[in-house]
Length: 353
Image (cartoon, rainbow, N blue to C red; front, side):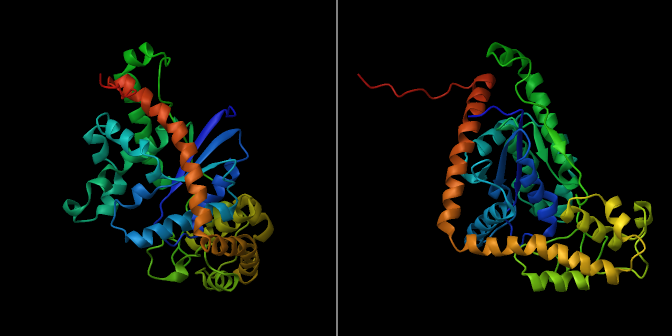
């Protein structure tokens, strides 16, 4: 296996209706990461998905759809490792060990659990509460150095770093004794940013674009065809003012800021560059340009996803190959962790005399 200077890990939940926010905030960045001197692992995080109840048959389809989106967007399964979490048992096993390293107070501070559990926290699953520890295991099973994440996952990355540091400290003597240097797990660096790190609703610039929004016009789905994409952009909420010439002029204008950010991310340029071209323009001029760009970038992905989803055996083969390659990386890590914490690992079976 080639030596890489970095190991990049990230994942997407298979919970249906992948949209523009998933593409710009995650999948597009995954494709770009392939150009770094890095081993990239991109995971369909199906264990995370079942922290909320999922219809079993629908979940199978959604796992394949996310995989199709990865491939259609340009992730090369030969250069990167594409797999689904549940096929690599080291994720779940390392989670238990990390459950014994993480502290209850750390998890009690996780704001995403409070948001997702809502008012009836007693009815939430333990999996939902433990979600950030599983995420730490996802990352550290591969001793990943970098993780591209959105702002909403930043707190979870901080927990991953805390768990890695505490494990390294708690077992420092054993880590040295087993020849792993001064620390076993890296302190993973989050990769946060980009012109559209947080994509907002097309109907309300104060709300994040979401698959759960009852209005389909609030989001552009990755399965939308060219006509649907164009219609949704034309109907996107705006304000009556012209676009400003500088980014500071977008303050207090959430819908304008969102559309400028989407344009910048799709084109691969900064907000400043967008406003250098369109500052002073009305939305009657800017929206058609955004329609053309969105259709150019997204419609081919929708077409390729449709083709790939129609061939589930191919998708399953990609996942099987990726899972074998992922496990080849994760298994030595877990074996080393078992040695470090003092487990007696299973050796060859002895023949009875």
